[in-house]
Amino acid sequence: MAASPVGPEIERLIAALSRLPGLGPRSARRAALALIKKKESLLLPLAEAARQAAEAARICSECGNIDSRDPCSICADPSRDASTIVVVEDVGDLWALERAAATKARYHVLGGVLAPLDGIGPEELNIAGLIARAAAPEVCEVILAVNATVEGQTTAHYLTDELASSGVKVTRLAHGVPVGGELDYLDEGTLAAAMRQRTAF
Amino acid sequence: MAASPVGPEIERLIAALSRLPGLGPRSARRAALALIKKKESLLLPLAEAARQAAEAARICSECGNIDSRDPCSICADPSRDASTIVVVEDVGDLWALERAAATKARYHVLGGVLAPLDGIGPEELNIAGLIARAAAPEVCEVILAVNATVEGQTTAHYLTDELASSGVKVTRLAHGVPVGGELDYLDEGTLAAAMRQRTAF
Image 1 (cartoon, rainbow over the protein chains, first blue to last red):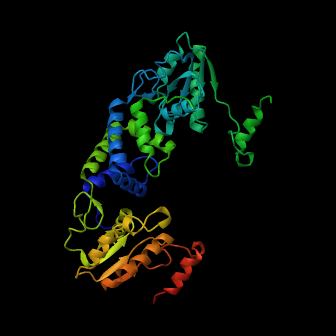
Image 2 (tube, chains in turn green, brown):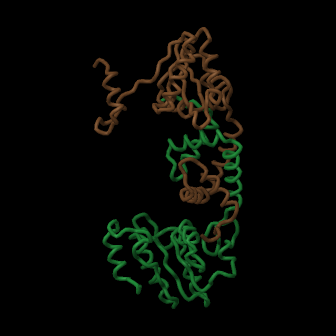
């Protein structure tokens, strides 16, 4: 491997890009080149957008969402249903549910899932905040929208136990056939769940 | 699709990232989230690196390479062989050859390939500059390191004709089996070329 043919400023851009999830060293190099070629329309806007986002982004002290305001625009929106809290593992899950317009409820971001082997216990997650919020008189339902993984389901069971004393209804997302999914390609667990939880046509 | 759950600054970062080659809208969102979560170690360094690269990057007036200096570090390096010019389509190809330490010669970046249907004729490429450079007395060989595509080969033929009067030797990269490649997965054209151009063992 020869010395880099580009200056240190360009090398640093490549290095910064290669740390993005989804970009390897090779594609980071390609991306850097594309950015530099369109300096005015791509590279400078990216620099400015990154600077402004770094300045603006804050974590909502209520739900844990990332937004440019605290409380976030969802928690601050009076039209959102305050009687229901949708519990998600990560901010990315919250954004996904919002894009799907799946709920008008509010959210609670755990910041991960229980993983005792990795040293992630209840104290490492934003569980105390959830228990406190669920104890508020207006809250009737907590929807556990955690991932359908072993860790996600373990966390869901733990939260169900913790929330039992608060008297709120605890629900979880339905399992079943993804919209557009083909049965032949689905795993047995999903098919069995979809059959068990079948609904009237 | 609901309104975005994030502020305009974060939306702009997602938009800027989604214009990177290799990142779609979905992965741009994921990348933005990862960046914002590691504001100090990822997002701010990216902003700074992008700003500095935009400021530093310039196109070499000699060969067309992108570097933080003009002439670029390759053209300015007296240890590089000035008797040979390696012609590439794009700066990315130049960087790839440098990473492979494939040559100690100098380069010439065409900035594309001939594509008459797309309105890219000889005037749109940096061909006049190549002819001028090849006419210099110290230049003995021009290596056409264009892609092995139809457009690349058309461009190579055109350049061969243009360079005929200059008296320099015009060569091209060898075709053959990629290192580590398996014959069973290679196309017939490559195999036939590898057989034709076989070398002594």
